[in-house]
Image 1 (cartoon, rainbow, N blue to C red):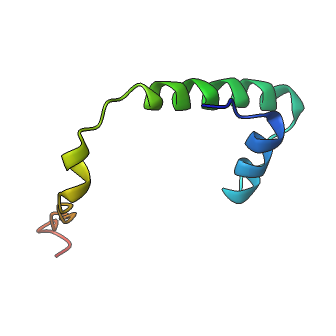
Image 2: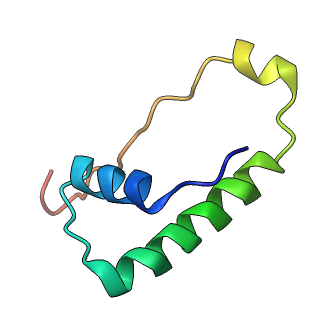
Length: 65
């Protein structure tokens, strides 16, 4: 996998509505690259794509119903 450049990290942050300035941009870039590298190492079984997702059920608070 190619590493994310500073320009990629900046574009991603703008798409997410987050403003990142230069000293923090380098750290964000490194952190994003570390996350992407770790995600690449996860071995997902091929049968995983055929499974239906479970619905998200949020329990109702009895006080606020």
